[in-house]
Image (cartoon, rainbow over all chains, first blue to last red; front, side):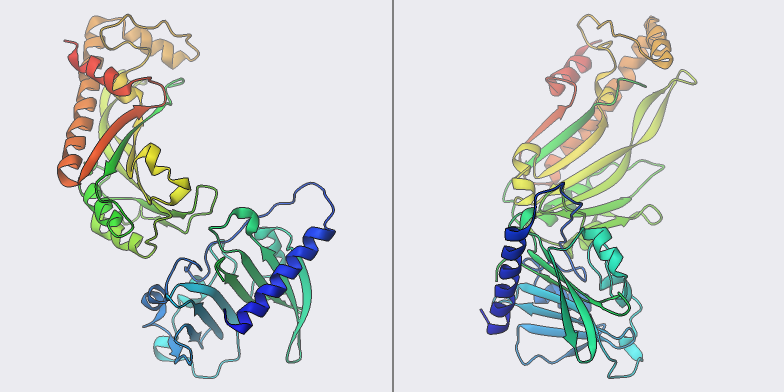
Length: 191
Length: 227
């Protein structure tokens, strides 16, 4: 396991443990898990599948690590990042808003980007925070975060209740000021 | 009509079935579907993963542009995993009784087809088959209130005026004879399709069952045997 992932999972486990230890029993709120992000299933789909979906249509950043791929959609100012294991099976999927570094012309101007880079239940970048909770229920934890000068809010969802065969963690980052989603990460169980 | 909503199913267990072969088997199966003359093509493709409690991975509404078997398989290929089920809908023509006119009519009936990955829903394929078809209402193949077949008919508790009118119509021998004929034609359509499937797909074994009959196959044989 690479250090960054290990750290992430240690944090995730600690958060889940804290929530479990401090939670008070009451009526179960609505909850739902998630299987896909950008039409891909972490833990099941491969880099080859991702390339068949996106390889020809958006600019990919040549990877330093053969198991980490990023596609950029400069017209919509967003990126899709995949981390795979040694067998090429996607483990972590992230879609994020970012500053555009190129021009919006040619094949990068793919109109389907906005419609396909979202979760299976339809959560997309730019959606309001309320939609996150409406779709998935209250998060297991909420924590502040900072990116540059931007204040962010991280909504953490653990999906272990849905079984071992589904993605186990989803993180949704919202811009604190606007309350809009700026990043979504979905992770498989097998890290 | 009230009290006639049980469904009937056909299940097929294939030879050499795996993640690598299942969509090829599915494609061959779909090629045998006897499309309705008025509703050709597949009008939906829904793919689920893990189990029925999960939201579908994809739900293609194809009613505006129905697809053929190869195109459905090409769409399914994007999500090829042994823990997925691929559900598609077509229509086929079966005889049905029109209560309003008292006539029989060949009508397009929905035909839902499932291709089960072996890891989907804790191995539901073992019970329902690798390939499964919801062939529609049971009564289209067995008739209502055991009016058809060699045994004495049931005396059902009539709850709806349309049902009462139907049963009254069937007290006339010529009406009952026509009911037998049309139902036998439906059964023959089903058996002909099953034979086509078994010729096209490497099937280990198959089974027909329904929600209301203890032995659906035996009931159909009984109806076919009556002259």
